[in-house]
Image (tube, rainbow, N blue to C red; front, side):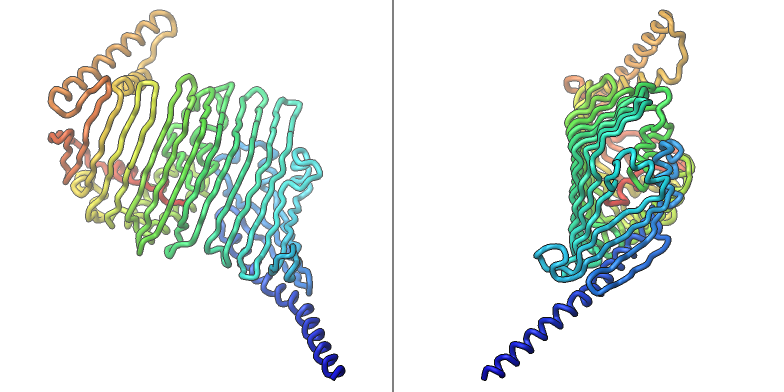
Length: 526
């Protein structure tokens, strides 16, 4: 009996030993499959290329080595404005070494497939530059816990540093930390990013800073390769200050191009005018939500801030809530890919605008011919002249390709209703500003007096137009605020329910450019 029990125990021990020895090898195979999925996704991105790859699998540990490089088109439109040091780091190849430990308890007491520590090796030129900021500490720390299911968690840290040059450049960076939870194949993932503070002094040029940046997002793949989900960006304080506003190296449009892959800055600041000497934004927030219903995409975005100090003017609070509904998913995906390709090319703003117009005409046609609806749920901005309050919708009904060639045909199939409340003082200031750009006067006392005469004339003209429209019932004026209800139906325009003559030129380029300005902001999910 004792021998029988001993034999059973020996068999169990032998079986456990086989399992203990075989399991790490099996989990090593599964870990390699998971890392291969991640490498394929990495190779598909728009700004990185994987130049070579090697995987050495062992029984308990494995090593994956690959060389990556930013594509030449990366920051193509602004790379000449980047500091030489940053441009050098971006142009050099980076060797990524994944040290993989596979086994049930590779990373902790929690059962996993593997635990991966990632080491980044830079070229001597790049490492010399990075050492000025981070010293001997790695500039990027990354580890990846791969669960038994194939999903896992990625944790990334960029450490803080305090950098200073004799030239007067100072950078105080309090670091950045990101955690990403993902399912097998990265079909769905959540990310959480925090960065406490950044303060940059650009010698005599100016300052840039932000405090308490937080970004949370949920992303999942849709049926038409459109990323679905939601995102929430919050920044407690954001500040730009330039001492030389006549020679601002990075303008507003370039700043937007820097942080988006669609380069919509070409439409926001087409003439590249310089930003004010100082901009401060308090309590900035940006939220997006994108969903899929059958073959349609619905998207909603909310943007706002508590206060904007724009030069000498104060604005805020701002609340913007916009939606794009019933968008053709296939056309949206094709157009998004096309515009992403365009953004990677070295195009100036005018070339980019023309290329997007062409893309809207071809790849994006289905977005206009399948009854989309655009809603401005809310636009409220407190300005020095008063509160601007606008809301309404615009939709296209049964458009065909030929309608986009003539504005009159397009308007016949456009429906829109909008409610406006705009301070008259704001309209006067806008008109005065526009008029001043058309005149050149001396800078002396006579010049100042001439400008004052121009300003007064413009204000009287605006007031005359407002009184005329008020007397005809097109608008209502209450406490200096102009209010009206706009309705566009079958090519006819109504203000406060009264027909208003609408004259429009059949300009093909105007129609397409207007369409292109709508599309870039709604073709990506952050």
